[in-house]
Amino acid sequence: NSLLPVDYNINISYSGDKKYNPVKNSTILHVVKGDVSLNVNANDIYFGDDLVINIAFNESDVDGNVTIKLNDIEKGTASISNGTAIFTIKNPDAGNYTVSVIYDGGNNDSGAQANRSVNVYQQNSTFDISISQNADNSVKLVVDINATGNVTFIVGSIEETVDIIDNQAVLDNIYLNNANYVAEITYNGDKNYHPSTSEFNFAIKNDKLLIRYYVDGIVTKSGDGTRTRPF
Image (cartoon, rainbow, N blue to C red; front, side, top):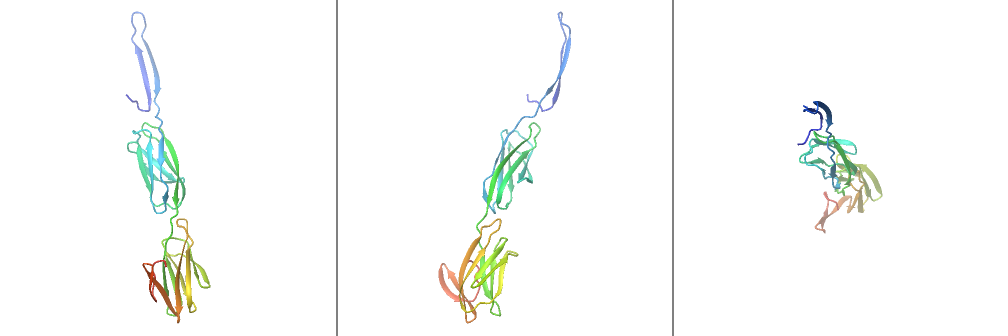
């Protein structure tokens, strides 16, 4: 039968016979915890996805919990069942990480640790653009984007970089002469998103804003209004 990992006192006595005298002896038996190993599996992901960490031990009767760290920062614990455990880290930032799984040991097993490198890649960025005209005929450009950082606007001779606040970058009160324009708008990226650029055409005619609208790739009309997708 299996013995628990403790010290056992063993006492042995011989009652003797016609030729030999009785004798007693004792010793201590040290039963140590068994060695275990574990394997950590985690796939590379993109920002916005969850990082799922699968842990498997070489023995199915391992008990207790494992502690999970990401770049030496503790993220939590997971219970071991039938020699396996699963732990999920919700939406980590983009970057290169070392996943560490630490097992401090159980009733019968000694501790173990394993590491794995994993990458969380940046996502491609997208943003929405709207353009409108104020009462004083100045123009307002708004970028809606679920990211941080800043946006660079280039319209005619105007170039300005604006910080994103509450998921918006706003370039307001720009005065433009009557002419055709190509607006170039660049999101400059952050730790989680790649940079991206969008261009669109509009015109100022008789001091009024004219915007080309596209439906299924076909120019349908011009007029004043708002565009809520990149041109």
